[in-house]
Length: 282
Image 1 (cartoon, one colour):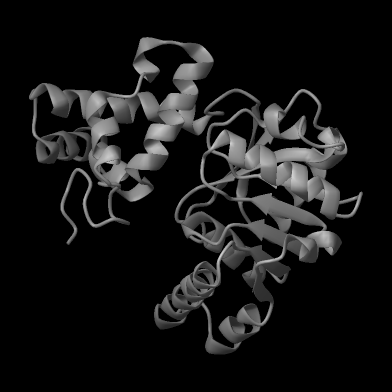
Image 2 (cartoon, helix red, strand yellow; image 1 turned 30 degrees about the vertical axis):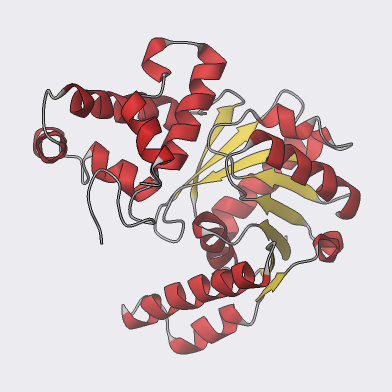
C-alpha cells in the first residue's frame, strides 16, 4: 500500500497522514476549502517540527516525509490510491456520501477504510459496490503517539481486506492492532464512553467537582488523565457523537448522553480545541 488517501485534514486526518508519510507511504489528503487545506498542511509541518525538536526524528527524515504528502480539493485525484482512510466528522450521512463518491473514483482494487469511532461500518459498506473491501481502521488521538488501531470488520468485509489493512497497520505503521466486530463503539469506546458520561453526570449532579473527579481517577486508579480532562482532549463533540451512536444502537441508559454534555456542545465549549470545555484553556 504505497499510495494512501486520507479524507479530511483535521486533527485525526492530519495525524493519520503523518504516520503514513513517516512510514514511507505517499499520501494525498482531501479537503473542502483552500484555507482548510493550508491548515492541514500546517498541522503536519508543526507536528513533524515538534518531533525534530524532541529528537524523535532528524530534519532530513522530516523533510523527506513532508515531500510525500499533498493536499487536494479534488476527489478525482484519488483514482490511483491503494487505500483510502476516511477521517471526516462523525456524521453518518456525510460518511455515507463520501463512500458513495469514493466508490466511483478509486480504482477497483482499492480498499476503502473508515476511521469512525462509533458509526456501524456496514452503513458505509452498503453505500458502495465493493462492500467486501470496506473496513474500519480506528486510530486514536494523538495518532503519532497512541499505539493502537482497531481493525473493524463488518459482516461482509473480506478476509483479504482484513489481512491487508492489518499488515499495513502492524508492519508498515508499526501499530498494535486489535480486531473488533461491527458494533457501535467497537471495543474501546464501548467501554470508555460509559465511564466518561458517568463522570459528566457526577459533575452535573453536584456530587463532586471536576478537579476532584479527575484527581480521584488519577490517584485512585492510576489513570494518567482524569475523565473530564480526557473529554476535553478528545473533544466534547466527539464524545457526544459517540454516546449518541451507542445509545441509538443499544438503547441502554448508561449510554445516554448527559444533558450537561449536550448543552456544552451547543454552547461551542468543545474542549481544548475551542479553548473551553470542562476546563478553561484560554
